[in-house]
Length: 296
Image (cartoon, rainbow, N blue to C red; front, side, top):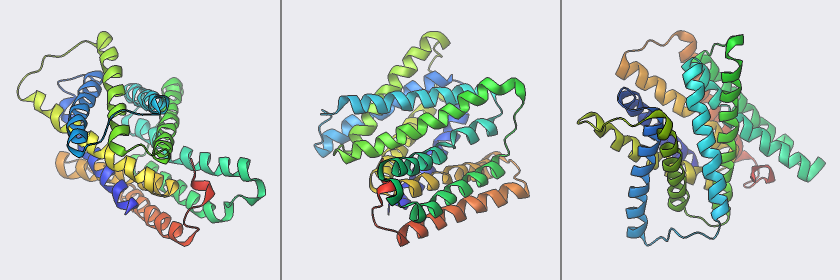
């Protein structure tokens, strides 16, 4: 079930990407971030009131850290997109799953020493690497020496995204509901977006282009809720691997909606992503139900 939550989150995020592509002709990235967060906050405020869930938290610093690292990741990704080829920026950002797997296995070795369940977790780690190879085949990133700074920033976007996802899992361990976690992240996005708009300017809200901001916000909050539930209840490395499915959905949207052509290596990469996700789920089902290496 946790795997299905991540697949659903990836579908929502890919659908959001289509809306962002259409809205980007009318709004700058900081505006989209701010409006996305604002729509999410309003939706979650009504949802939590309806469900009787309080937005008060006993761990504000944990939410602050999740918002800070998540916002840094998002801002770094936008910068990388601006200075690098899109495929390269997306590939570097999707290294977050590799970082997560490395953090979990490295932490297990440091804490547990020789008793760390490396033999049990290594196959799942390899499926994450295989999934990332599929991403590289599908996106076929390019890079040159003049783009070194952009490449470093893109790499950092994936690193901070990994920290954000691990913090999501940590928040669930202390009993924070998904809606509260996503609400405070949306709040952080609004603040970051507004700060960016002080420098990038504000575009007029014109009909009907402004309507794209509503599905962007709703798809973002639905994706965040599903992703948060997946990371809070599922095996972290498996969920991180299944996150690659967002690239598959995005590629399919690109082909069907925008008429883009996908070469053979792209289809092979897509197949490798799907197979690695299936393998990770099957391998995890054969290991210990809650391996210490899965603890963030």
